[in-house]
Length: 469
Image (cartoon, rainbow, N blue to C red):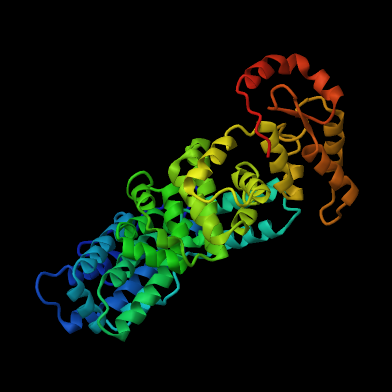
């Protein structure tokens, strides 16, 4: 086994002439030559495809395991693609060709026994580093005492695991063919079963965060025919896939083009049959879009229509569940509170717009106070010293006292009295009556901070943000 030093950039194995037998280059080339062949393809040629695809998947794993371990095994000599990204691009061509040639795809499936299993059933190889990063993230989310250091380590592990693009390279072909199954007409029960499995797999790949992160824009690109075909988009939505479109509309290579058009022309019936999980995914995607595009997005007719569709069909419960999704973007907390007060008032998209425009005028201090309530106990401790939440006066004695208590904390030993004191520091702070942009734990801190805050207060007061939740 050959070691790769930390300063080296991993290169593929040397590309020989001709390429090494059963290597990555030869395997991808054989797949390409069979699928893209001009004229008839023999049964023997089709029959080679399943083993070739599994060989490519295996060698991609060998390559990326070497990237992470920095140690070359004897099999690394087969990883001879000049640019590993060419694997995905070559297979993308093959997938699109089969998608546009239903007869050839049918012949392929009839003769390449095992390829259908590879596409519809085989586990997607995310790599053990991505799986480890996802497992760590789950542990942190479930731990109320997780700290910033834990989150930094998880984020670092996730960033590092992002260098494993084995699944990404194969997702071009997988996505293209899965969508082809949905596009092709149903002739027999086998086609129907294939469509149902393809739809289920696409929803899993496009809405599960772990897969969505690994497959990225390769999957978004494959989903294009679904997004521009209303009938297919409704089927995807009813199967739980609407969060995929909303997520791509928030951030993807086609967010302002195809995805925007698809959302604007989304058939009303697509909103039927949503589950609590799919609605939460949709609202998580909308929060992300607000973070990317700004609060002005919440005042658009399309956002108002989405709120109307969700509320008119599923009542107030989705807003209550979504109110805890973010401590920074609290729009669903705001809407949940308003809907609770006047549930009968919002019967059309037009009636939603005035309420949504009021959200812009919710003062910053109010947003922070309610965001503080949403935070976990560990989140409150971690953000204690940021001056974003709680008392704005940098010399606040209560902040200093809490910071000392934070330093003496022992993980696993929680003090409800201290935790309530911390909660009150951020949750019961009082906003400056004039500008409502900052908060203080008491009048003494507010007076002490006045010299610094005076000029800021005048500017913030001029914005006239006085809409309370």
